[in-house]
Length: 395
Image (cartoon, rainbow, N blue to C red; front, side, top):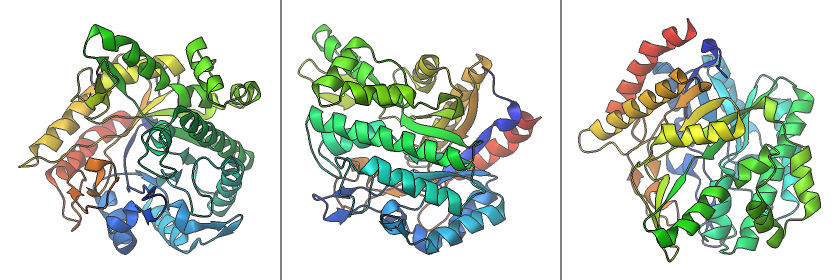
C-alpha cells in the first residue's frame, strides 16, 4: 500500500493528558501545568510559524464534559475556531488518559456508551473536523491505570486490566460509529504505543513473548482481528465474555482507520526471568517495530508521537529527530504507506520522566519550544525539515 504523496502530514500536538493520581484526589492536567490555557493563541501561532498544518489537539474531558449530554464548550469553541482560522487541521483527541470525576475511571461499564454520545455531540458542534483519535493510547492507558497502579483506578491485576481494555476499546469503537453516522468521510487515527520486549536470558523468553503478544491486544480488538488462542484465553479468563469478543469482531471499522504508532526511547524493554523489566534505549528502533505493526494490520501508518530530551546543547533531540525521519523515509521507500510524522509536543511537558505518578513539577525539555515559548534547537530543525520535504512530498 502506497499513500498518495499529497496525504503526508507533518504534525505536532498539544500535550493534553489528564489522568488522576492519589486515588482520584489529584488531576494531572498537562494543558494547565504546561500553561496552554493561558498561552493557547501563542501555542497555535508557534505551530503555524513552523509550517505545521496538522495538530493533534483536544480539550480534556474533565473540563468540557460536565454530565451526560451537558457540556462546557467555551474554551473548545475559541481554540478550535482559532485553529480553523490559521488553516491548521486538528486531529481531535477526545480522551487522553483521563475521564471526568463523575465517570469515575475506566472500570465503569457505562463509560463506552456515554462517551459515544459525547463524541457524537462533539462532532455535531464542529462539523468541519474530519480526523479523530477518539481514545488515545488505549494500551498505555489500561496498563498504567489497571495493571501498574499509577493512574485513575490505580489497580494492579489482570482482571482489572482486561476490564479497562474492554471499556477503552469499546468506547473507541462506539465513538467511531457515532461520528461516522454524522460524517461518513471521517478518518480515525489510532495513536498507540509501538513497543517491544527483549528477553535478557533464555528463562525470560516466555515472559517476553507473552508481553510481545499482549501489546497487540487493544489494536486486535479495535480492528476486529481474530485473537490468537493464548490471547483469547487470557481475556476470557479475566472477565471478557464470548459475546463481548463477538462485538469487537463485528464492529471494526478498519477501512476508515490509520494506524498511529508512537515511539520513544523507552518503548523497548529488557525483561528478566523474574518478570522484572526496565527500558532499553532503541535496540531494534522504530522502523523494525512499526513495520511489524503495519504488516499485522495492513493499514496506512502514521508516526504519531516521538520526542527526546534536548541534551546539554539541544543536539540529542535534533539527532533523534533526524534519525526518526530517516527511519520514516526508509519505511516509505520500502513500500509502507506512511501518511505522516509527528514531533510531540509543541511545548515542553511536566513530570513525564516519572509518568505523571507524582506532582514534582519537573519540566521535561522535549518540546519544539520551552515553557517560556522560546524555540528550542529541535524546533528550528523541525521547521527546516518541513520546509525541505513538504513540497517534495506534495509534488
